[in-house]
Length: 551
Image 1 (cartoon, rainbow, N blue to C red):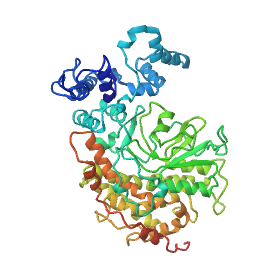
Image 2 (image 1 turned 45 degrees about the vertical axis):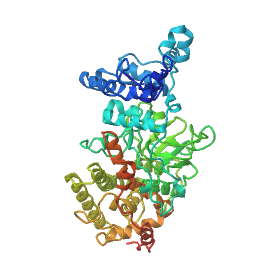
Image 3 (image 1 turned 90 degrees about the horizontal axis):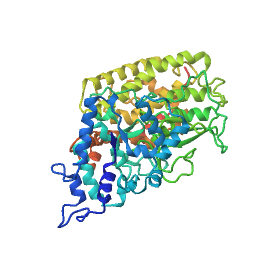
Image 4 (image 1 turned 60 degrees about the horizontal axis):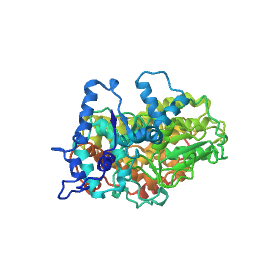
């Protein structure tokens, strides 16, 4: 089954055999191409309306079985024909294509080649063969009308979802200003919500874990996509450079993500600031994490306009199915993702042959403490963070209503916090008197809990100990610990970007309604961001109070 962006389909039909007498919008000769195309009741076009054709195709795929049908998207074919050839070849069960055969097939199937070798016959099969020509015709109101017909008739149909991205004139929900220009008064709740997206076979689609409420929420903080398996026993050499002399390895981070600050702190403490280059995202968008000023590493360095992180995932594996996660450690030489798992990246930085600085004569990931560090993370810190994030997503996915899973997640989180508070009553840091990477990781979460999760995820006042960690009375040892760690992480914690978390609720609502008929207006969705943003200055002042003495 071959599917194409419906806006380009309409444009092609309009011009294919010469422009019709009734034009786009109709006249005395007829209703016009646009009205004919979106008429779902009595479309007079020779092959019926395209919306019903896509719906019928989806039903056929489901009836026959997805293992017996391959859906090919024309835009994906144009973007990376060799990747799609590999996909078609694998579906047919043929021997792997050699590079030479792949190039030969791609060349033989190109529009220019077919024009030169088929003579006049080719003009009856294809008009331009381009992508995105629709933007040159009609106005935004007409295209919005088509978008609404698309949502009403095809919303929630998996086969149609990749078309949503191909039919966008501009990426919705883009950050309004660069992250450096945000201050503590910047209210990101007033920014337009974005479509929550992931990649399916290399194509940007609405995130299925958001769209389908009954799906089990996957562990979104873990690596779902890793082209190079990393183990702390096999570190990379961060002293290596690319062909232009810049660092070989590059980090894509987001300051609203709690793991940016521990990674940046580790780089500083380990002397890696000049050995690994960094780009900081300005926020989420309808295409995932956006970098308004582009990327500063190969192969995108020097390209004008924004960069979106999905481009790195697509380049690393054109057919990947994954969430578009930060952080990402990128290899500019192989053009592959080393890891998108924050914990693995911290271990990688700490064990790299390029990390030379130590703290108190001990590294952040000392050999003798590695088993204890891993156990602390896997038994307590990782599950705690999972409980909080899962509860927050559950809250929004169920229209901010209480559910048993939400209540269970909160109780699990509070239970783990009480255990960690008790532990820190006997030791300065999680594993003694020395800071390790698990301290960097955990303390960054504590800062963000009070600044974001407590209110954005409706933890405040909920069942259990719903007080702030930093300024409440339930966790005195966690409070002292957080103050202690803030002295180390302060230069790397960007409270000004934490407001990005408060865009999650309206964005989940937008994503779910875009995949169903009807829904709220954009203004109404923005107004649904009702969670109160705490006074970040008060939190900073509280953290800056004197840290406790070593036990």
